[in-house]
Structures are given as structure tokens and as C-alpha cells.
Length: 270
Image 1 (cartoon, rainbow, N blue to C red):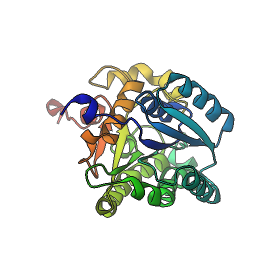
Image 2: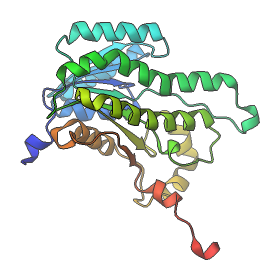
Image 3: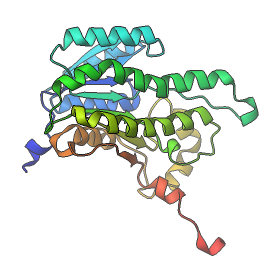
């Protein structure tokens, strides 16, 4: 029951898509600083290499950049083959974090191409990456210490936002339910699947929204602040450790209570 044993991820091998920036970088930093070996994947090679160099300087874990455009299904297959060569004994953790958004001023102007791009990366590629890396996850998983899949969803998949982002919201709701499907089908193979639904965190995707509406957003969060790197990293470390080995099929809001607050009715006005 000691904390070092219960929540240690030292020596584990992780793959984090979108690990070079934003929430993916926060997760990768948490893994590396706690002794894991982390492969970060995204299409921007220069960003990945810079992130890997920074993370390797932090230690004690290790970070390796694996550039690849996840929109390209052929490249996803290649990444699976590369990882099988690099880690023939398997991997312990897959974090499906890469994502895209598309917003318009109204529903009438929302293009069909947005659905293809956003659902392709945010939902379809979560399945494709899992499918490609599942043999590696199965090699390392045991009943007492299963391999872990952590899918990054969003509170926009739990509640309705005022922003016109239907493809993004639908894709994240899909990620949440896909996670449950994976959990039900993979638990017997000693692989768990859970999703995190983050609220607002500092990231490139959220930059404009936080700049324009930051104070309004914070006012709707009971905890009174947006997410910090330690919040998302801490939850991912817990889910990946022995302390999180019995959690399977969960969708965990990480939002300071904003989802619950937005579902609370003012009965005096009813």
C-alpha cells in the first residue's frame, strides 16, 4: 500500500499521440518525470523533436519522437510496424490524444468537410491506433497489471457548448462510448480502456477561446480556475499505475466541476 509502489510507472513504455504540444505534452511530461519511456507521435516533426529534447533533459524517463500524420491510415500502419521493431516485448500504455476542431458562426455554414476531418482524426484514428498497437499492448498486460488505453475525450462530449462545433462535440461523445466498447472487449485480454473528458486547459486549440472568454469560462468552474498540467498528468499517471489497474470503462470528467455546475438548475426560476 506504500505510495511509491501503488502509483509507480517507472519502467513502463507509453505511446502518446499529439504528445509534442498542449495536453499531450502535459501527459508526456508527467510520464517522463515519473520514469516512463514515452514515444510521442504527431505530424509536426520539428515540434516533436524539440519536445523530446526538452523532456529528455527532465528525466529520469526517456522520450522518443515518432513523426507521423495520423490522418494518413497508411502512416498509422507504418507507426505500428515501427513500434513493433522498437519494442518487440510490447508497450504498457497508449494515450490517444491527437485531435482537431472546426468552428463556424452558425450551423448553416458548417461544411461537410469538417465532419470528415474532425471525425476521422478524433474518433476513427483512436480506433485505428488502438487496432494497430493492440498486439503490443497484449504482450505486456497481465491480470494484475493490465496494459492501459487512455482516450482523451472532452466535456464537450458530455454537455452542449454554445460554440458551433458539432463535429468536435459528436466525435468526443463517440470517443467516450468507443472507450466503453473497448473496455468490454479488451478486459479479458488484460488491457483496460478509460477516457478522460478534460475541461479547459492551456493549449493551441483553446488559446483563442481562453483569450476571448477566459474570465467567463472560469466563472462557470466551481474550482475557480482552468486545468493545470499537473491535473491531467496526475490522472494519467494514476490510471497507468497499479493503483488504477481496476478502473475500466470509465469516462472521467477533469473539469473542476464545470460539467455538474452546468447541469444544475436554478429551481427558483423554474
